[in-house]
Length: 189
Picture 1: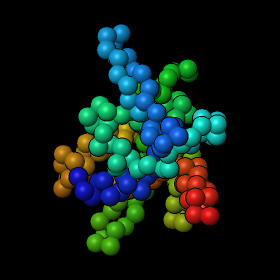
Picture 2: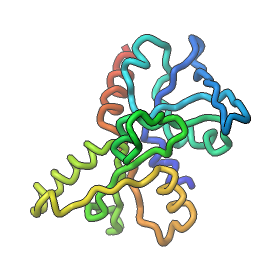
Picture 3: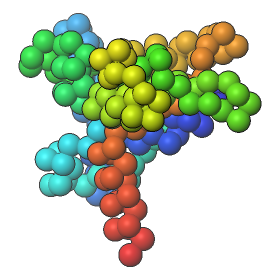
C-alpha cells in the first residue's frame, strides 16, 4: 500500500470547510434507509463552489482514501468526468466511481527499466499526452485509444496483485495543479 499511497499523495482533492478548517459534512441517504453525515472531497476545482466559501488547503487522495474506505467520507468526481465516462446527462456525481483515463500503448520508463502506465484524472490531459507521445515517437493519434478505468479498480489491482500489475502513475488534472500552485503562492505571502 505504501508505494500506491506515495503516488496518490501527489494528487490533490478539495473540500469546502468551516471557518476552523474542518471539512463540511453533508447528509447522504442510502437506499432511502440510512442517513449519514460525511465530508465530501472533490476531485477537481469547481471555482463556483470554492470562491464564495471557506476551503481547506488541497488534500491528497492518499490521505482521504484512508477515511473513505471506512465510509467516513465521499470522493466526488467532476460532472464532466462522469459524463465523459458515459453517465447519462444530469447524473449526480455523488456516489459515482472516480473515472480515470489511460492509453495502454503509452508508458513511462522507470529507472529499473520497467514500464509505468500514466493514469489521468482528466480526459483532456490523457488526450494531450497521446498527442505528445505521437509527436515525439511518430504514428497517428487515431491509432491510440484512451480507455476509462476507475480509481478504485486501479488501486485494487495494484494492492491485490502488485507483482503482476503494471506500475501506475496517477496524474491529477492540470486545472487542479494550477489551483494548487496559486493556493500555495497566496498562502506563502
